[in-house]
Image (cartoon, helix red, strand yellow):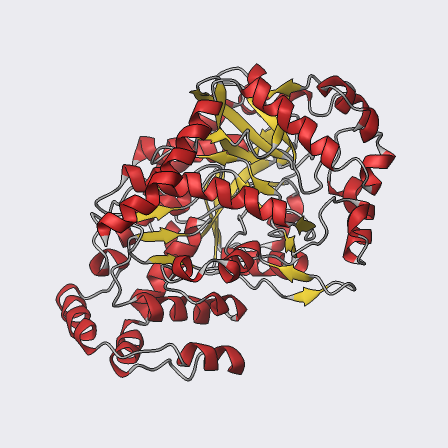
Amino acid sequence: MLRLARLAARPLLARARRFQESCADPEAVQAKLLRDIVARQTATGFGRDHGFADIRTVADFRRRVPVGDYERLAPYIERVKAGDTAALLADDRVRLFALTSGTTAARKFIPITDRYLADLKRAWTIWGVRAYRDHRPRYLPLRPIVQLVGDPDEFRTPAGIPCGNLSGFTAGIQRRMVRRQYVVPASVGKIKEAAARYYVALRFSLGTPVALFLSANPSTLINLARTLNDYSDQLLRDLHNGTLDPRLDIPPNVRAQLTARLTRNPAATRTLSRVADRLGRLYPKDVWPDDTTLIGCWTGGSMGPYLRQLPTYYGNPPVRDLGLVASEGRFTIPFADHTPSGVLDIATHYFEFVPEAEMEAANPTVLGAHELALGKTYFILPTTAAGLYRYHISDLVRVTGFLGRTPTVEFVGKGHRFANLTGEKVSEHHVTRAMDAAATDTGVSVGGYIVAPVWDEARPYYAVFVEEPDAADDGRLNVLLTAFEKRLAEGNTEYEAKRDSRRLGPVRAAVIPAGGLAAFDRDRLSKTGGSPEQYKRPCLMGDVAFAQSMTVLREVGG
């Protein structure tokens, strides 16, 4: 079996090697890709409106097509939703409209075509074979994978095109041999209640030798682990009996599908029961040893609070970032563990970049992938073969190195998240870096937080909103606040100046009831829609209205 797996992996490894070789000349690869995209989409409505037939060079493309966000594309997408595919796309059909996560605004409709799916599969294959190569003893193709996905068919457009979660859609169209490796049935994405979804995922995972946990947001993995511990008795009873707890809120048709796949496993139940009795708990690391597993999740941006909790529940397995992945496309492919850095996928998307400080300028500098500088931060503007052109996704990235001449970049944060009470221009990027550094400096951390400005007639200030369980020790919390403020000032001279001039007061902790941040997340998702698994809680809210909306039990520091 292992020999067959190695034989099957050879052509995939060769594909990864060819991609790596192409990284020696990103300018040539990107220029050819852009020509191909433009030529293919010339006859579309968007292509005619923007003179694609006259585009010969990168300079032509930039003259003809302005940088734009979703609103520029919205009229074309509305036509596609109604059935006029050629308004935006050369493809004959749209397989799905992927709905964005709802993290920042109302959900967007991203058209998913066969070309998009082929590009996505290619990039995921490279990610997977590199992970396989680097972790042969623990991550083998024939060992189970745990991944939670969302609902790919929440509703339909007037033309009958499904709209929903992209991961759920791709899970449903995988070849049967591949799908067998994923132990969580794709139909679990139809379960709306989060606790029930986690429970069912665990019910199908227990008793299997899981090698890989996949989740874009590590908060999903934390919730999965807590569900395992909190409901271990029920889960083990279901595992022993071959049942699924009847109290779970599961649609009847989904329950029927799941029940048909259930089996009894008394032997695994006995083993796990002994573990739970001996330890007084049941965490993933007690079920699946960390020397046999790999975790794939985001590690950059605002993920720090969740990553710091992973060892408690999962031990210390290697963690490989999934890359800069959104409904709009997969932009980077990480080749190493424990870093958010990934090489730009120059074979799939055409990339342009604008230096961070120039994004709002009338005539900003625009650079190609081959023109980036180490250590600098840029807004990334992808152009895709699926209808996105010079698309301002608001993602800020930093160049961390090069593979050949192709940059490796890490996700820094959403560039539009700023707070500015007195000219200090605090960004989410500054906040997350400062908090991560403070946690490292002090050994004190909080499970989750949101920083927001608080208006005070005497002296406004910034507050770190944390839940009551994280504020049990005021002394330790004050140590963290002091270190956080120091790091925030080091990373932002304007903030330091406003503190020195006493226009801003010192950072405080605003303690809110347990579950307060989760309630904020639910309310935000209910207003914007979106997938809980892909939702990223903002670590900075720029409006003083946020502080006014929260129930604050007490403050620490100041």
